[in-house]
Image (cartoon, rainbow, N blue to C red; front, side):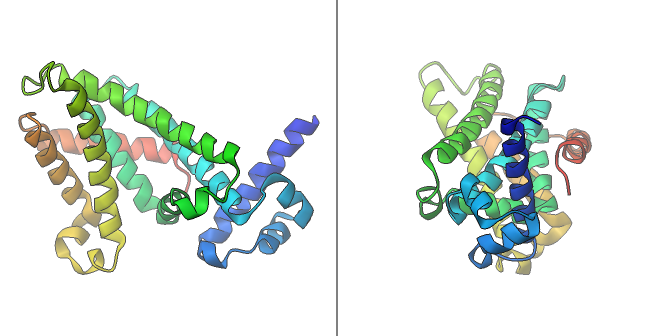
Amino acid sequence: MPTTDKRTQREITIIQTTLTILKEKGFMDLKMSEVAKQAQFSMGTVYSHFSSKEDLLLGCAITISSTMATAFHKVLNSPLPAMERLLTLNIAIWLSYARQPHHYFLRQLAMTPDIWQRASTARAQALDNIYHKMSQMVKALIIELMADNPAITDQNREAALADILMGIWSLGEGLFQISMSGFGLKQPSVQKDNGFSLLTSNLAKYLQGWGWRAPFSPPMIDNCKLQAEQVVANCISS
C-alpha cells in the first residue's frame, strides 16, 4: 500500500476510534492516550496526524459533516418538487441528529472558537469548506422556490435569500437543541413524536411568513418523512 494510502487509513482509524469513545464520554474527558491505545497506534503516530485534541475533534466533525453533505446532495438532486426537497432535507437532518445525538453535539462543539482556533488552520478551513458547500446547495434550492413566490420581488430578493437561509438553519438547529435540553425533556409539545411535529409545523409557519401558502400538506409530510428515512438509512451509519 502506498505511503499516502497508509496515512489516510491511519487517520480514518483514529477518527473512527475517537467517535466510538465519544459515544460514552464527553470531549473534556477524552484523552489522546486512550485514543492511541484503542486505535493500537503510538502516541507519536496519533500526534503526527492531529496536533491536539481540538484538531482531532475537527477531524471527527469533518467526517460527520462530509457524510451529511452526501445526504444533502442525495436529497437536493432527487426528482421531488422543490418544496418537498426542502421538507425532506430538514426532516433528514432532524432524523440524523436524533439517530446520533453525540454527533450533533460534537459538531456544535467543533464550531465554537475555543475549539477551532486551537485546531490546525488547514482542518478548520476544510470544515468551513464543507459547510459552505452545503449552504450553497440549499441556497440553490431556495432560489428555485423563490421564483414561484410573488411576495419576493427583485427589490428584496437578495436580502430575503440570506434571511431565509439563516432562518431555516436556525429554526432546525434551535429546535433540536431545545428537544435535547433539560427544558425540552419536560415539554410535552417537544417530546411528542420526538419533536417531529414541532419541526414541521414551525417550518411551515416560517415559510408562510415569507409568503409561501400552506407549504406542507399531511400527505406531503408523510411522503417526505419516508424519503428522509431512506436517505438517513443509506447515508448515516448508526
